[in-house]
Image 1 (cartoon, rainbow, N blue to C red):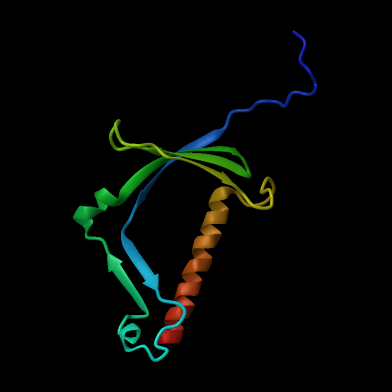
Image 2: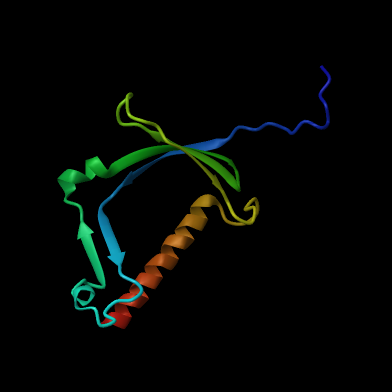
Length: 126
Protein backbone atom coordinates (compact mmCIF):
# COMPACT_ATOMS: atom_id res chain seq x y z
CA UNK A 1 0.00 0.00 0.00
CA UNK A 2 1.06 3.54 -0.72
CA UNK A 3 1.16 5.90 2.29
CA UNK A 4 1.13 9.59 1.56
CA UNK A 5 3.94 11.50 3.32
CA UNK A 6 1.46 14.33 4.00
CA UNK A 7 -0.73 12.32 6.36
CA UNK A 8 0.05 12.71 10.06
CA UNK A 9 1.08 9.60 11.93
CA UNK A 10 -1.50 8.15 14.26
CA UNK A 11 -0.88 7.17 17.83
CA UNK A 12 -3.05 6.00 20.68
CA UNK A 13 -4.35 8.70 23.00
CA UNK A 14 -3.83 8.30 26.73
CA UNK A 15 -6.83 8.58 28.98
CA UNK A 16 -8.09 8.40 32.51
CA UNK A 17 -11.27 8.64 34.54
CA UNK A 18 -11.32 11.43 37.09
CA UNK A 19 -13.72 11.45 40.05
CA UNK A 20 -14.62 14.78 41.66
CA UNK A 21 -16.55 15.33 44.89
CA UNK A 22 -17.58 18.71 46.25
CA UNK A 23 -16.58 18.87 49.91
CA UNK A 24 -16.44 22.57 50.67
CA UNK A 25 -17.50 25.91 49.21
CA UNK A 26 -15.44 29.01 49.95
CA UNK A 27 -16.28 32.53 48.91
CA UNK A 28 -14.72 35.93 49.38
CA UNK A 29 -16.39 39.28 48.88
CA UNK A 30 -14.33 41.68 46.80
CA UNK A 31 -15.02 45.25 45.86
CA UNK A 32 -17.03 47.87 47.69
CA UNK A 33 -17.42 46.26 51.11
CA UNK A 34 -18.51 48.67 53.78
CA UNK A 35 -18.36 51.95 51.91
CA UNK A 36 -20.94 53.52 54.22
CA UNK A 37 -23.66 50.98 53.33
CA UNK A 38 -24.74 49.45 56.66
CA UNK A 39 -26.46 46.45 55.04
CA UNK A 40 -23.37 45.53 53.04
CA UNK A 41 -21.17 45.97 56.11
CA UNK A 42 -23.12 43.11 57.80
CA UNK A 43 -22.15 40.63 55.08
CA UNK A 44 -19.05 38.65 56.06
CA UNK A 45 -16.08 39.32 53.76
CA UNK A 46 -15.32 35.60 53.52
CA UNK A 47 -17.08 32.39 54.42
CA UNK A 48 -16.65 28.66 54.05
CA UNK A 49 -19.27 25.93 54.08
CA UNK A 50 -18.53 22.20 54.34
CA UNK A 51 -20.91 19.84 52.63
CA UNK A 52 -22.05 17.13 55.09
CA UNK A 53 -20.57 13.72 54.13
CA UNK A 54 -23.99 12.08 53.50
CA UNK A 55 -24.75 14.73 50.84
CA UNK A 56 -21.38 14.56 49.04
CA UNK A 57 -22.42 11.78 46.62
CA UNK A 58 -25.09 14.18 45.31
CA UNK A 59 -22.35 16.69 44.45
CA UNK A 60 -19.93 14.35 42.74
CA UNK A 61 -19.15 13.32 39.22
CA UNK A 62 -16.84 11.29 37.01
CA UNK A 63 -15.14 12.46 33.86
CA UNK A 64 -13.56 10.24 31.22
CA UNK A 65 -10.65 12.29 29.93
CA UNK A 66 -8.69 11.62 26.76
CA UNK A 67 -5.31 13.35 26.39
CA UNK A 68 -4.77 13.84 22.67
CA UNK A 69 -1.54 15.78 23.04
CA UNK A 70 0.31 17.94 25.52
CA UNK A 71 -1.98 20.82 24.63
CA UNK A 72 -5.34 19.21 23.83
CA UNK A 73 -7.70 17.02 25.89
CA UNK A 74 -11.36 16.06 25.79
CA UNK A 75 -13.34 15.38 28.95
CA UNK A 76 -16.72 13.62 28.88
CA UNK A 77 -18.96 13.46 31.92
CA UNK A 78 -19.92 9.93 32.92
CA UNK A 79 -23.62 10.32 33.75
CA UNK A 80 -24.79 8.62 36.96
CA UNK A 81 -27.89 7.35 35.12
CA UNK A 82 -28.23 6.46 31.42
CA UNK A 83 -31.01 9.04 31.05
CA UNK A 84 -28.93 11.86 32.57
CA UNK A 85 -27.55 14.47 30.18
CA UNK A 86 -23.90 14.05 29.23
CA UNK A 87 -21.36 16.86 29.03
CA UNK A 88 -18.44 17.22 26.68
CA UNK A 89 -15.61 19.65 27.43
CA UNK A 90 -12.63 20.45 25.24
CA UNK A 91 -9.51 21.90 26.84
CA UNK A 92 -6.76 23.60 24.88
CA UNK A 93 -3.65 24.58 26.79
CA UNK A 94 -2.56 28.18 26.30
CA UNK A 95 0.84 28.58 24.73
CA UNK A 96 0.95 25.10 23.22
CA UNK A 97 2.17 22.90 26.05
CA UNK A 98 3.69 20.10 24.02
CA UNK A 99 6.97 20.70 25.83
CA UNK A 100 7.48 21.08 29.55
CA UNK A 101 4.97 20.22 32.24
CA UNK A 102 2.28 17.59 31.83
CA UNK A 103 -1.38 18.43 32.41
CA UNK A 104 -1.14 16.97 35.92
CA UNK A 105 2.04 18.90 36.75
CA UNK A 106 0.41 22.10 35.55
CA UNK A 107 -2.74 21.48 37.61
CA UNK A 108 -0.64 20.59 40.67
CA UNK A 109 1.30 23.85 40.27
CA UNK A 110 -1.93 25.87 40.00
CA UNK A 111 -3.35 24.15 43.09
CA UNK A 112 -0.16 24.82 45.06
CA UNK A 113 -0.18 28.49 43.99
CA UNK A 114 -3.85 28.86 45.06
CA UNK A 115 -3.11 27.21 48.41
CA UNK A 116 -0.12 29.53 48.97
CA UNK A 117 -2.28 32.53 48.10
CA UNK A 118 -5.00 31.39 50.54
CA UNK A 119 -2.41 30.84 53.30
CA UNK A 120 -0.93 34.31 52.73
CA UNK A 121 -4.41 35.86 52.86
CA UNK A 122 -5.14 33.99 56.11
CA UNK A 123 -1.88 35.27 57.62
CA UNK A 124 -2.80 38.85 56.67
CA UNK A 125 -6.16 38.53 58.40
CA UNK A 126 -4.59 37.07 61.57
